[in-house]
Amino acid sequence: MSELSAAFVRLHARLAPVAFVPEVRLHQADEPIGLWELTEGEFRSSQPPPFWAFAWAGGQALARHVTDHPEVVAGRRVLDLASGSGLVAIAAARAGATAVRAVEVDERAVAAVALNAEANGVRVDAELGDVLDADAGDAEVVLAGDVFYSEAMARRMLRFLLRAARSGARVLVGDPDRAFLPRERFHALATYDVPVSEALESVRVKRTTVWELDPNPPGTRRRGQ
Ligand SMILES: C[S@@+](CC[C@H](N)C(=O)[O-])C[C@H]1O[C@@H](n2cnc3c(N)ncnc32)[C@H](O)[C@@H]1O
Image (cartoon, rainbow, N blue to C red; front, side, top):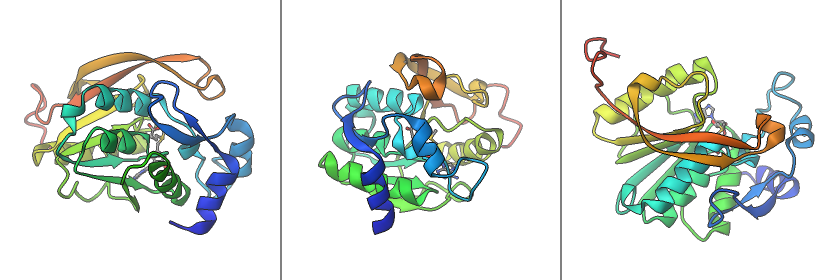
C-alpha cells in the first residue's frame, strides 16, 4: 500500500459504521462533493473519482447478504472484484472465507481496502490491477458490488464473470437497478432497501438486489460469449 494513498484516505475520510451493514466500519467521506473536487473531478484529471470513500448500494446489499448467509463464503476462497472501500471483501472475511482477494484499479482504493480490513480486524489481500481480461484464478466465489454503472465496464465485467462461472466459481453481484446490468443473465437471491447518500444517488433509499449469475441461461447457450 502506498503511504501517500493511505495518508490521503486517513485525511479525507473517517471511520464510521456502514448504514446497512453496521457490523463493518469503513473510512467514509461525510459528503461527496468536496472530496470529488479534491480528486479534481471525473473528467478533468487522470485521478479516478473517490469511489472508495462510499459504501455503494450494490456493495452494501452484497455485504449484508454474505453477513446474513455466511455459508455462501465460509471455508471458500473469495475474489471481490472492483472492491472500492473493501466492504464486500471485509464482510466475506468476517463470514469465514478462507482467503479474500480484493482487486481494484485505483491505488487509493487499494489503500482504503487495506486500512479498512485492518480496522475490522480481518485479513484481505488488496491488489492493484485490472484483471478483467484474465481469469478469476483459484477463487471459488466471485463477488462484485455495483459494477454495472457504465456500458464499457459492464461489457468487460460480464465477460469476466461468465468465464469465472463457467470455470465453476459461484458469482454473485449486488446491483441497484443500474442501467447496464444484463438482467437476463442472472437470477435474484434477495432484495433489500439500502440507505444511500442522497448527494450521490438523489434518493435516500435504493432498492437493491443480490443476483447470481447463470453461466448458461436458457436462450443464451448458443451465443458462445
Ligand atoms: C461504484 S464503485 C463500487 C465499489 C464497491 N464494490 C461497493 O459496492 O461499494 C466501482 C469500483 O470499480 C472500480 N473499478 C473500475 N474499473 C475496474 C476494473 N477494471 N477492475 C477493478 N476495479 C475497477 C472503481 O475503481 C470503483 O472503486
